[in-house]
Amino acid sequence: MWLSLLTNKYVLMGIAIAALGAYIFVLRSNLQTCEAEKKTLEAELAVSQASVKGLQLAITEQNSAIDKLKTDSDVREKAGAVEIAKAKVKADGFKKQADTLLKRVIPQGVAKCDAANQLINEEIKNAK
Image 1 (cartoon, rainbow, N blue to C red):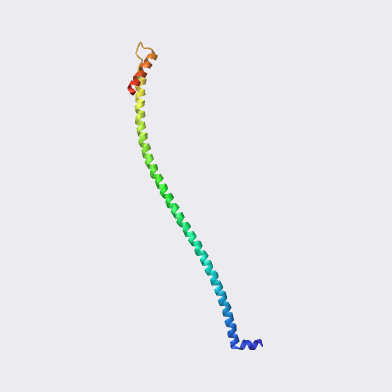
Image 2: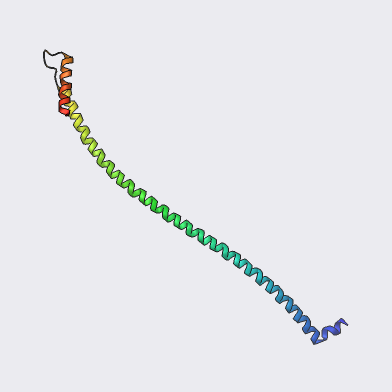
């Protein structure tokens, strides 16, 4: 009986159509699965791209901040060099004043305390 069924072309066509239908069902199921995976991957890609843009923006901001710090540092360094030069000139002046004071000789016949007091009073007058 099975042999006679298999030789009937309509039965064979029915079996082939049923097999084809099952195959199409499996393919559609796979297609739906792939489409769902595609949507998930697209969503993950969008999140990843947004993250990359955020990181690029943060890097740009950090680079700008670093450039500004460098510029500010250069300005402070130049200003500091000017102040150091001024301080050296002032220090040299004070050293000369100190050398002049140290080279002074106590006048004859004047007590050391009186000579020191006279020197202090002269410097106070000069400071005004």
